Length: 226
Ligand SMILES: O=C(O)CCC(=O)C(=O)O
Ligand SMILES: [Fe+2]
Image 1 (cartoon, protein in one colour):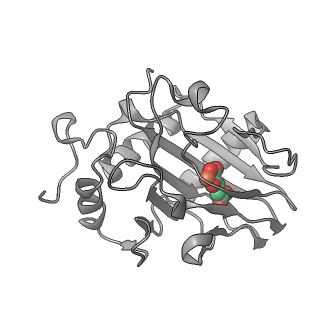
Image 2 (image 1 turned 180 degrees about the horizontal axis):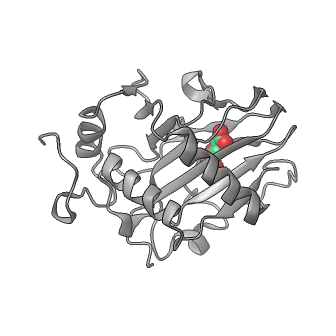
């Protein structure tokens, strides 16, 4: 499929992101997008996707409404995800501007998107190695996936640079991405055949000094049901 050079209208959106090839084309058609070389997964980096002012506003919003992060398929490790999470207020103009930028950038249809979340890590906090898709064999699969299906694409933006630590490590491809203010990461959680891709395993590593803030946006196989 041809790349989409101009901002999408609703007619040119790429749905849930499956099949992935048109999304990959669209991402690569934009300036500043780098693909991490790997036959195992489709992972993209775009530095300076958000400017510092917007990142600062988003950090303040996360600080204001954060709560302990949760996990699905609890494995007995209470230290598996020690960060805090917030649901960005969908009615806030900053959230709406961010949603619009993500739609333009990914070409994914927002009806397939979960509400944007913020994550905050203080010193010592982390999110151990996990996948963003829900395991079809997991105890929580029906609870999280019966309506909207599994997660397709993940889009994440670092909002600041902690003084030490806080990198994101993709273990299966031995790639470590370091936080930088405004840097975006996007990857496809599923394989070409639509099954989960275990090579997407990633670890939000411990912050060693300072505080780390990111936003995360996940897309689903079926409409989210806003
Ligand atoms: O904070 C990170 O580096 C990773 C966050 C993450 O993997 C998630 O929220 O699912
Ligand atoms: Fe994740």
